[in-house]
Length: 454
Image (cartoon, rainbow, N blue to C red; front, side, top):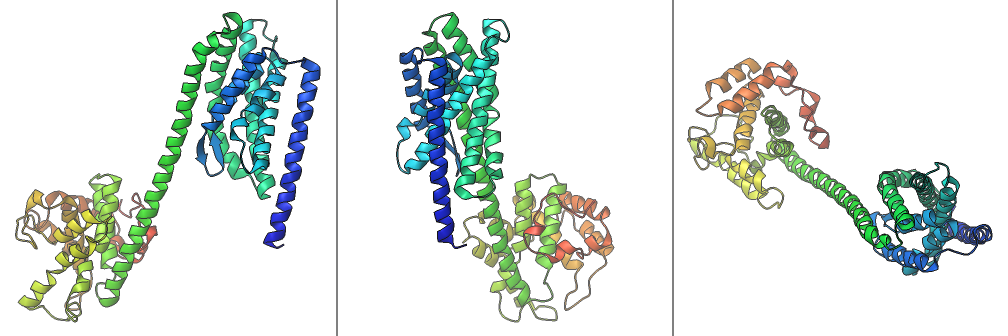
């Protein structure tokens, strides 16, 4: 079926649906008038209709398909206090201030709000007199009316979505229920109290209680809006983190393609660094940063002279000096990325030593960023347990011994102790960087709580 034909059929369904709703609303209004007679307290009903219209104009968008307002509160109050005719009039009037294109949408929501108000009024009228006490009757009537209006509101939202989009409306139902369900226990005591005060004390008490009632619900709607914004921000942060990781992975892939002997080294340092940070009980953000920094710690080697990385034998003094420039080059590259300023700083200092004899700045002890001290241990260990063109990989026990011998001179004692605790509880494949995670440099490697260490 062509897209044009599908759109045409969808428009025809919507016209039929809208017409059916309008006719149903008119029939309901006539039936209610015949049964109940003319509306009571017309001035109060007009005032409630005005409040409902103003409230609907101040609705807050919850997501792309749903808005939340306090217009159902005066509708429910009118339905409980007076009956289905008044509930229908106030419910339908809530959309008067929102008359604009597309008019069919306006007609749909006007009709459904009117039908919801009538259903609430009928349910409240049915419950009246069942308890034998004025307050009990109002509480029960409010509960029944509130339940009816919520069922109608959610039900018509789902039905309207299905008619318009000709598909499953499960997502709308899932989105609507968490928003609407907590409203019921919030509204019902307020409406019952308003109705009781109106009947038993004075109609003027409506002014005394209505403003706090509306303020309380407005606060709830704003809370829902804040929750949505928080969720959107979390999603945006996750997307940004994924983009950062993809960027880091691309950089490391470039480096690995150049130096086949150290291919996979960056992924191993990233995993070891993340696990050390977790063992040291750093927060999740610093664990994530340790991973990303470990991934890009050697990226400055891209800027080294051709042939230097691939040289099979020992480096000369001048070549060693050039090699040491890679940490500064790495900082220079990463400092251009807005989200990587702290990563760039750690990359600059990951070859500093706690005794102050490292490079490039000769920092010592606590002057060295903690993540740089973590990267230094993970980097050295993986280098020792990996094959190099000038030597074979060391056994893990020998590399662990070398780390222990270099504490308080090259490495931070606390970091080495945390890494040793990880290695002591891990299997040999983890110790040698041979598990599946060490060969994958993408978002599957990122989960912060996953580790092969015990």
